[in-house]
Length: 588
Image 1 (tube, rainbow, N blue to C red):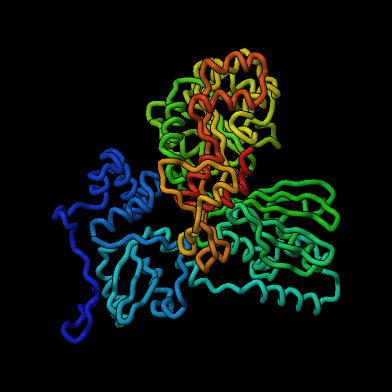
Image 2 (cartoon, rainbow, N blue to C red):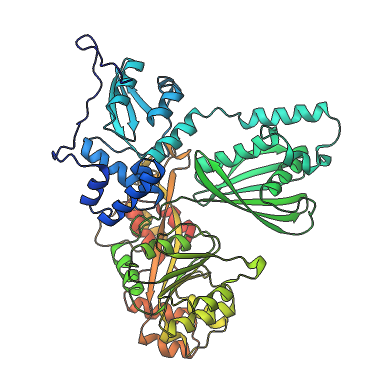
């Protein structure tokens, strides 16, 4: 039955939204996406056919087919409805505001309250044109409703995160200790099958799930389970920095370790050898892929869990922190018909993300694009992606050898690890393919000596190598608590770095606040250096010169170093000079 119309005059009406877009064109969402250039008419027709087959909403079909992202649809609706877009991923809703809208109502209308100011309640809606939802919220709260817009995915995640009724870690620890006191047998003798076959509400299962959920909610990339003499220390890596999360009693070490190994399909009985496992869990409706690694140490097994969000969106190069000059230089290199483009840096420096971001910014519609990855971190529409599995012999080198018979134009090799892969990669570039790969070196100039050490012939490298990108990740300064440093000239002079001359000299420091968990930093961005290889590099490569010679040639050609890029970002207020020097060190 349709909802009753609110009686007028003596009640505050809900915030009204236009029944049609302000342009006057009463277009369906699909037609508006076509008009905005987000999808083609043919893609819309395909989505409509799928909609008739499944009876799902058109928005769900468009997202499921990866034709558009939920954010694109939300932004279009927000523009048409003249509402603001909001970011919910790091938003914390006060409990008193959350209680105004019951959980079933929030789920039914895909709506979440986020703030209250006197008699006005701000509510994030996936569909700002849903007047039934707006009227229902108004009647339930007796407040004027101010509508803002967010994607349905972000709203559902926020609903699950805020309304979720899970036990906290302290309560779970107390339950496990109580169980241990009731059963005098040592916990370490508890059979693994009992944990595996037990109820999903078992305290140890809830405890591990809660630790993973907390880490994912805080944006952690890794969780470290580190056994000590008297306890099990759990730390998380957030924005590249380790934080202590919780200390567990030593008696719980075996239970937690066993649960993690079962989760990763690892051998529970084997504690003397290293093992690797994989698992998939869901946190706030997000699919999280886990890579679990165990290493025996003096006090047990040290386990590290890498968290990879399965449905992450590939960021743009500019969002990653690329300057316009470096971005354009990289895209020009990747626009070449053949050759090798390398991303370098240590583990965890964002090399794979840069690969994906660069690949999405080149026109692949008329190209045959293949990737070899371990693991597949992002899903790329229109790209053939292969998961490398070295445990069964599906290695980078074996896949690359076969891939050359698949008629590729562009090949993305997740990592060049061995001599065979390096040699095959160079030969592929010399036979008309564009190869994009990563290499573990400290800087861009170090890539050439590394490839020569791996067995690539010096006479092959100058004709195949196009560009090398060196990069690091640094923490971004929290915009809420950063403060300008007085007398920046003194700080610059004492550190021996040269600031950019085209910007006013300003430096910042951070204090820490609730928004950044008192760290002073929130999120990360990259600092980069792009070395373009030309004919001047030929003779030094043949002579097997060291990295300083290639750095000198690149600097003559106008390359800015990672340190210089970091100093520029600190002057712009995006980070601090101390953070830049922590990552790349002072100039020599």
